[in-house]
Image 1 (cartoon, rainbow, N blue to C red):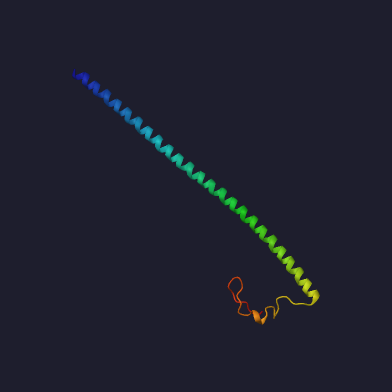
Image 2 (cartoon, helix red, strand yellow):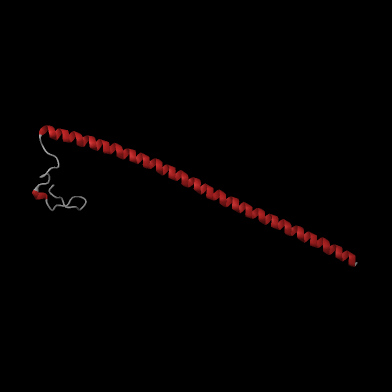
Length: 116
């Protein structure tokens, strides 16, 4: 009977070791899966950030183009206005452009208009 108990104990111990080994393998797989999910999540966030950055860069480019167009139109109108005034002999923005009665009046930005 003693031999039977030793054999049973040995089989029981082997079964415990197999179960422990399987648990460790399962735990390792679980850790590996969590790491992969974390890497995938970070990669996805990086890609989303890149896409957002690209969209913002494109938007900034379009805004700059619109600003150039508006500035060009403004400069063309100003140039035409200067040519028109030059042809008529009137002055633009020279001394006396702001009448003396307007001194001390604030413009829309809260700045005092000065005689130029």
